[in-house]
Length: 329
Image (cartoon, rainbow, N blue to C red; front, side, top):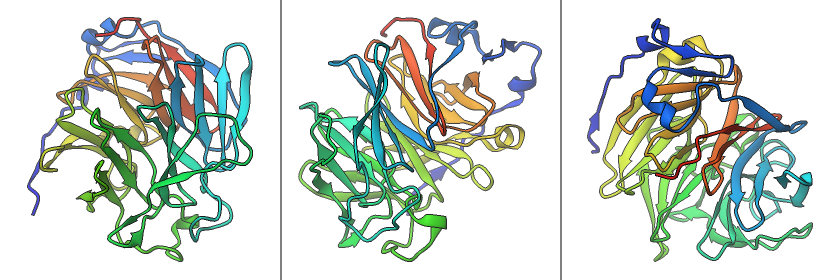
């Protein structure tokens, strides 16, 4: 049985008179000002999406790649051309039994070492690989689609280690209205797919495992639980033995603000940028809330460009960015 160690974090700092705030950012600890300005502003880049997700920066083309889970498509955005449709379909091709509509497209995206895109596909219920090229008739290669012979629910997000191991989450968001019609696994898992083809179960106890990211030293993975009404939290697992700890408790924040823990990324400073109540939270490696980017609504995911000049954020209906202090740590 895994040992669960609970760490309590004090949230009242949010209500303190020491908070520095403008309309777009609230600063609770001035150490965060080394990576973001207290005057940082949210810049909307594009809108009219349904569920924008999976932001991924393509440094070779100087563009953002992202998905719309509901539209079953992948898009690109760059400063010159704006938004362009890129790959369709993205996550549901008839490969696996699934619903014909709903959240069936691709979600989380990442590059492999060769520059190919690895996707979490809701409808096809697998991790797959595709060339980073525009296509209306894409050819996907299956990486993994089952655990002990049973199909995954709807792989959601992923993180790839320097060795090439893939850590990913498998909640039920690809199931329309959370129906069990096509379900083969009776829990929502967190997994590790090793380069040798082995699939290891990290956890089956989270109600809605979602965003996932590796610490800088790759000794830990952070996993968001996207369940704001019942269990809003971030867990931290050791990559060596999968021992888990409560890293951040979002219960009080979730009572006050809309939105939950969805996607997250780790900055080169070691701080965690995560979607959460009210927008984006910036949390130290020790679990202290440093700042909040005030979207005032639910947002789905975030990622940096290769220079960490900007944080790109997918909302449900829009894509935006926040300028950071350009300094790789």
